Image (cartoon, rainbow, N blue to C red; front, side, top):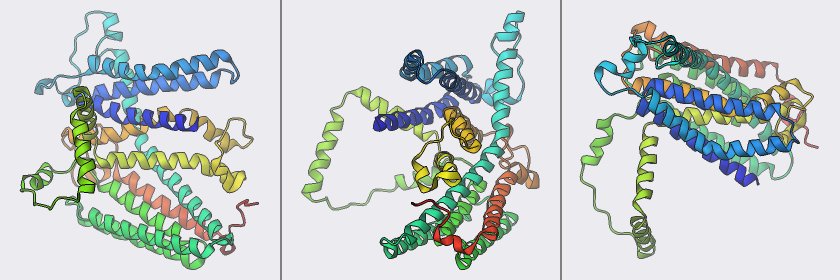
Length: 445
């Protein structure tokens, strides 16, 4: 049963990752917002239905199963409806930029059309409110990501302490964790070197990067030397600081076409053939794929084209945020009362702890939260990809992030998240005790 649930969740995540950027890419910004709003509203209503009906009701069970089965038809229907109603033409005088930011000149013929028609009051209020909610929620998502990341780092440190000090193969665990920490730090330094190669980094940006890395190294060293931290915590903290710096200076744009097409134009070097034991299965696989019906090739090309509309930076940010948010729903109950075994216990509304009840309540609305977080990232990506002109330069552009209209991704909030994460970790080290290294506050009995 758990395998089917995991497979269903994976398919749901895949559908969301493919459908929302497809709506933005094909239909434009308004179409993408309309589809994400309809999708979030559908799953919000579904969550309300699950919460409002009794658990042991047969009617509830039948209705929920019907909704779960029909959602695979409802989601494509909502996508087709959004593309049909809100898709814009490709003409320069009626592009999505002019329609979104230049005002609407649509003339309505009646009061009903003015209220509920195309570009009417209801449409502008709902989609416009959803747009503003996502844009102004971007700082909230950023700060929550930092807090949850710190929880994951602290939980990883406590877990490694328990593994090293439990007496069974402690030396092996210690050597393995040291190798893991060294690998994380080495990888982080490499990606930090890649980040500082960005051409958009100015002298002020380089100074801030140096200050942030210096503070991170000092905190990591302080935690290890004082005994209130460990190498795993320090390496993960340093890696997250590097990730924050990447998120600050990335533009969510795909790689330069000239950089990607140049290697393809060069002639491929000749390599000797592989041994027959390798070439035989490879040739058989190619022949099998060529005999598949054309529909499979068409579906594969559509999926590949859809994935190409989203850059790796968006997928990395989405995957990381989903991971830390989900891990926090397991870590907080474990820290409160259950100990390490609480990591395998899902929070419920029947819990006596208020924080656990709040997490359980939020977990019911996780699909809607997923849609909102993903849409906010896609708005930044497609705003830069579709070529919205910057509205500010210099210090104002640094304050506003990309400086694009309709995108609230100010670097100030990202720097606040970076400084706040290190500040909270420093406070934890200052208030912590050296004898906590034995993991005594974890219930391991």
